[in-house]
Amino acid sequence: MDEILLKPLQLCPIFHGMPVIEIEKALDAVGYRIVTFEKDDIYALIGHPCRCLDIILKGVMTASMLGPSGKHVKVASLKSGNVVAPAFIFAKNNSMPVMVEAHTKVEILRISRDDFHLMINDNEKMRWNFISMLSNTDAFLAGKLYTLSILNVREKLAKMFLEMAKEQGSLTFTLDKSRQEIADEFGIQKFSVIRQLTDFQESGAIKVVGKIVTILDPQLLKVYS
Image (cartoon, rainbow, N blue to C red; front, side, top):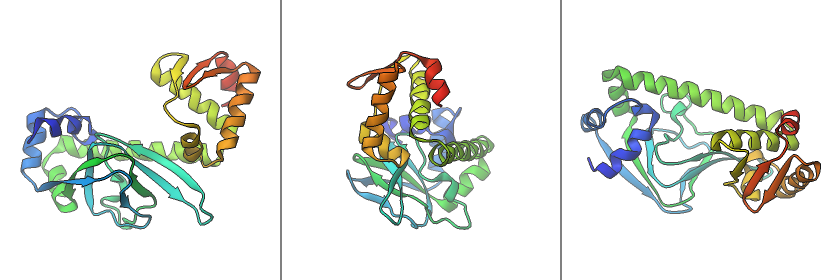
């Protein structure tokens, strides 16, 4: 297999802790193919059955939920090494609850459900990696549900800023999302995000200059979150 393809597979949780030669051996034992999606292509609509294991090799896809009224909520951003909808591969009801579309040009490594079943049956390490990934996915979705359904706008943004500061290791960090993307992620209006950012700045909790955010009072944000 091309080394360029193997690098993102090493980032995939299914192959965590496995040497390249073992990953290559596991894939060579089954059938797989490379599938390409152009920017803005629809990967799957809500209700589309999940029949394959798809691992993103290149590019970014977004998974979103759409309500009857047209309300749009971004559930996740999927990038190199991520598996698309892993919890639905072996589900009795494998209809996907989200719409997934290509945010950029995307290349995917696709393995049939039956071949993936053989892979994890033959490799205990891979099997436990898959189980661990499903557990982490469940924990992520539980946290997402809590954020969307329980927290108000102020609490959502405060929680997001504290998490980003922790991820980037500094109270001054880069906000890698537009105001509209934040609104889509939380299922709220863009003006609500802008208004809350203004309130945070006026209260002395944060300072925002373009895409650079500095948390001036972490304790104040913790009270909000």
